[in-house]
Amino acid sequence: MNAIDAPICPRCLRHIPNDTSPGAYSGAGSRWDRSIEICSPCGFGEAAGRGVIPPDQWPIDLSQPPEKLNFTGKWPAQ
Ligand SMILES: [Zn+2]
Image 1 (cartoon, rainbow, N blue to C red):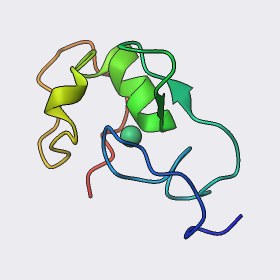
Image 2 (image 1 turned 180 degrees about the vertical axis):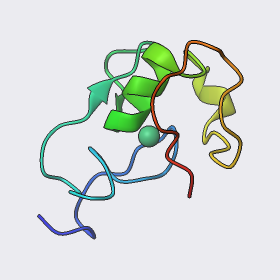
Image 3 (image 1 turned 90 degrees about the horizontal axis):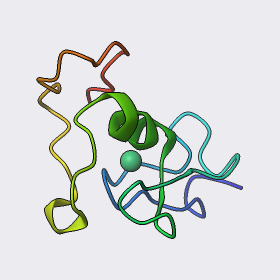
Image 4 (image 1 turned 60 degrees about the vertical axis):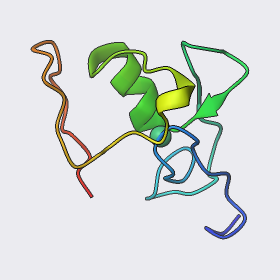
């Protein structure tokens, strides 16, 4: 699958599962609603980053790293 056909994450508008391998495999189910497929970085972000952000606030602002102290990963800045 090429990048054009790959699904887009509604939370951050990047490709699912990520921009490196668009469409290579399924993304994560959002913790807000498991039926909503989001990208791998967003799945991690919900678990360890900013936490669950309601879909009415999507797409999220990726330019600012999360303030939460429990975020230990590399923030995928654009
Ligand atoms: Zn995403």
